[in-house]
Length: 171
Image (cartoon, rainbow, N blue to C red; front, side, top):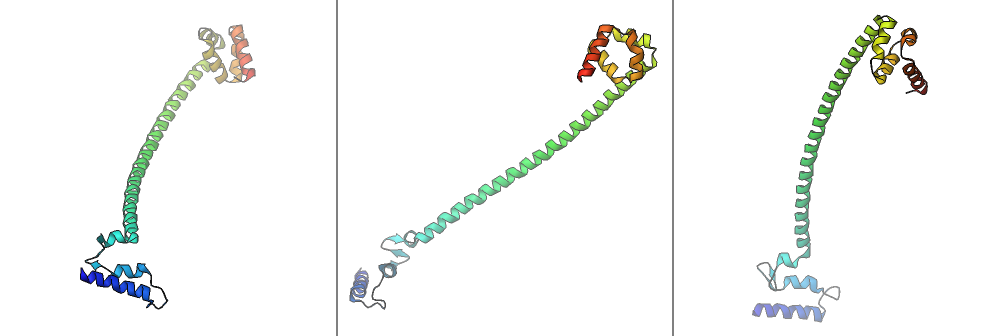
């Protein structure tokens, strides 16, 4: 205790007596030298007294949080990239399946058209008159012009007129 009092008195003499080189002595420069006992200044730890050290601790803690969040984001990004790749592969499989199905459908249509082309116009017209209009119009659109010309006289005339109107309208 007496050592502390002596230090305070010396500081007061230095500050008040003007023994400093610049004519003034900063208390900030002198006070840390006072009362230093085992890293404490007037009952405070050195870490509490140093705002720079506290800021460094806070910054280190914040950097740790940021690093943790960055790793979580990177893990989520990797998961999403893997899922996107999986979805791309599934889409390719679906597209290939649709293409194969469309090819089978096109093959069936071609075979059906070959049958109608091979029939005599009278026979083909009898079969077409028994079908719904939409199917007949699709078949007439798919057949070549020569076969259509041969079929028209034998088909139901209102159906032929409807086909003509739709063809001219671009439907």
